[in-house]
Amino acid sequence: MRGGPGEAERRQRWGRLFEELDRNKDGRVDVQELRQGLARLSGGDPDRAAQQGLSPEGGADPDGGLDLEEFTQYLQEREQRLLLLFHSLDRNQDGQIDVSEIQQSFRALGISISLEQAQKILHSMDRDGTMTIDWQEWRDHFLLHSLENMEDVLYFWKHSTVLDIGECLTIPDEFSEQEKLTGMWWKQLVAGAVAGAVSRTGTAPLDRLKVFMQVHSSKTNQLNILGGLRNMIQEGGARSLWRGNGINVLKIAPESAIKFMAYEQFKRAIRGQQETLHVQERFVAGSLAGATAQTIIYPMEVLKTRLTLRRTGQYKGLLDCAWRIMEREGPRAFYHGYLPNLLGIIPYAGIDLAVYETLKNRWLQQYSHDSADPGILVLLACGTISSTCGQIASYPLALVRTRMQAQASIEGAPQLSMLGLFRHILSQEGIPGLYRGIAPNFMKVIPAVSISYVVYENMKQALGVTSR
Image 1 (cartoon, rainbow, N blue to C red):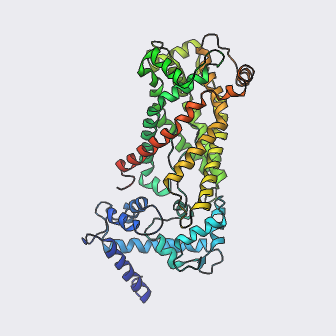
Image 2 (cartoon, rainbow, N blue to C red):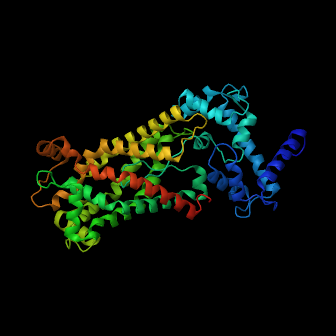
């Protein structure tokens, strides 16, 4: 590999790139220098690429950086992988990737993109204005990024955010093979768990008010937002606004871990001999993983509802509450409301995902003329709206679930099945009765999303998932 004019030319080019990245001229390129260098190039996520680019898999010390020889070896391996990937996308083998080939590659993964979106993707890499990508343009755009397959390429064109609004029906996060190999996945799970804990704690009073309004019929209790908060404070003081929040936070970590592990197993079972999964197959795997996690941690959901609704002095704590339920109602009580909860996963996750993709794609088509990345503010807005739409679709099931969890602890409440409760609510309160408590639920979405995102990003930086 060392002989020939082509190799000599490549090494000269790599040497010039190394000198450009080595800002402090110490003969090594460290993570910070690589991140700053990538920030000057087009496309990609600088933090992710910098961390993966100087990963231990290349035999280099990630803290000490790369010297020229290590940097050259790294780029040589990258070019070989990029060339294979370029050929796999170049369907007609004419040495160029055009708009139709970009669309075909996305379609092979089950993702439909418009002609305008494909053109934007090409425009982000096309330097000579031909609206095609040749090998040099492809190589120069992705050279310093760790790309293994088409799914890794999609990382630069599709971004997701962690939005914790206190609901448990979303499909799990997906991590790349690189993130799994380097251990970044568990750090992101920890960051997500901490973000969820802070977010849920910050919006706990609204969550408790929602549960009260769901459980108590409008015929017997004219609760409104301010009146409900005032009643809770009068009954148990300001601290009572956070009743049930402890177990709500406690169940985040086991649910996330179970969901992640189950998702990987379901993906493996569905994929079989396929190289990758389509979006529909990922949705099925995610829904099954969510159902698995909910089945295992559901008793904690029941305990959360009972503790949220408890009167002052009713229970001594979590264990006392669990023991009394077991003693008075038996083990089946820990799965009251399980069926509507399970049924709610499909409309919530499906509508959430569909609305999110639709809004994001519509924004890209109308407002993004020079980039395929809508930016974090647009993604947060799309996530907030899509989550709200998912809640509207699944809210009647969530309300019935909560009433089934709580009805045994309320004096005089009828002990009804899921269908029986639906009929009872419709006959006594009408359709609006199926949406009691949705106002405080909507009120908590924007603060919950904002808090979870800010905490998540800061936790990732603290854990070393991204560089400052």
